[in-house]
Amino acid sequence: MISIALAGKPNAGKSTFYKAATMADVDVANYPFTTIDANRGVSHVRTDCPCLERDERCGDENCHDGKRYVPIELLDVAGLVPGAHEGRGLGNQFLDELTNADAIVNVVDASGGTNEEGEPVEIGTYDPVEEVDFIEEQLDQWLASIVDRNWESVERKSRSPDFDVDEALADMLTGFGASEADVAASLRELDYPEDPIQWTDDHREALARDVRSRTKPIILVANKADVAPPENVECLKETGKPVIPATAEGELALRQAEEGGVVEYDPGDEDFEIVGDLSDEQAAGLDQIREVMQEWGGTGVQEALNAAVYDLLDQITAYPVQNETKWTDAKGNVLPDAFLLPRGSTPTDLAYAVHSDIGDGYLHAVNGKTNREISDDYELAEGDVVKIVSTAK
Ligand SMILES: Nc1nc2c(ncn2[C@@H]2O[C@H](COP(=O)(O)OP(=O)(O)OP(=O)(O)O)[C@@H](O)[C@H]2O)c(=O)[nH]1
Image 1 (tube, rainbow, N blue to C red):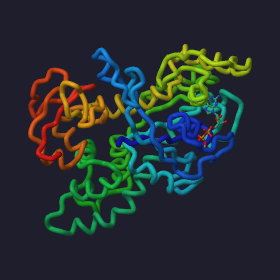
Image 2 (cartoon, protein in one colour):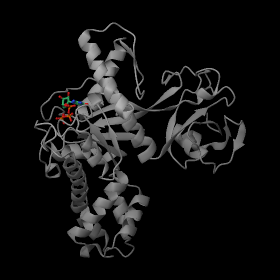
Image 3 (cartoon, protein in one colour):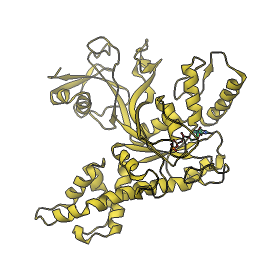
Image 4 (cartoon, rainbow, N blue to C red):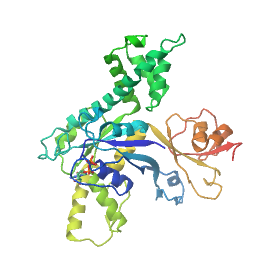
């Protein structure tokens, strides 16, 4: 499953974002280090369900009237402070939690109302671009320290006659989630000595930075957009990273109101409808949330996860079925599964994602939208419905 980690300084709103996105019970409070354990939960990205192309909605539990929610793993990492990679704050232990993450959502306090340690200051007085820089620096330094720690073993391997520097570094860095292709691409970008004994700290750091940016791409959530000075959001955009303005608190309130039967709202909607009785205070709170949503086109929470998965990680959603005309599984469930795969994936990749036996026994595939057999090198597109024919059942 795709794994997205929420990182950021203390009090930026990670736990609120996490709680909203997973509706799990975690501590939320206005003091640093509320999160003392890495939380791991299930959240979703939202896409158009293929059933929208048919007369009837599929009725799957993850499909709300054609809005399809595809599971991803979400990780809430404790707040990072400057020096975290040297063990400051809750430091390295939490950076290590990022090892399995495919991408990082950096939750930034765009209101400028907390300093780099997460302590409250007057709104607008802390420059949120600084926190973007130091979070990225912590990530880079953390990987650099892993490279440093393992360098001796690379040096040792280099004494062997069949030593290959690409291979040795790939061996070291795949544990961190880097593919061999990532490492090879990084090495192509860099000038470095063939002999690892001649590498300097600068070489190792440059490698760490490049590999980190490839394997843990970052998207920024400009959180607390409800109280943030608009120029702060603009400044964050100038970092060149994707920026999604958000109100995690607003999303949490909406999801709770939805659960309480007070509003009709699906995560990622641009607006909500009030359907239950409200106190004046609740009504005023919801009005405020609506104002922020109108300005930014939603609360930003679902948008951020979608941007991380579909844009940054360039995934598509494919739907394996057993019956290519009814789009059902063996039990008659319509469109019961949705898989996220990197763009460029083929039917065989989908077969392997379903099960390694199905992949091993792959014979051919049928496109559920055209009912034609598709070639093995066909590139799956967003929303494809595919019947896989395999010797495995
Ligand atoms: N105005 C506003 N406040 C928010 C928003 N999201 C979170 N907050 C508040 O910011 C404070 C910190 O939120 P948390 O979610 O606990 O922050 P955190 O980043 O998880 O903090 P640590 O656990 O210390 O790392 C709380 O008082 C939240 O209510 C938002 O969208 N708008």
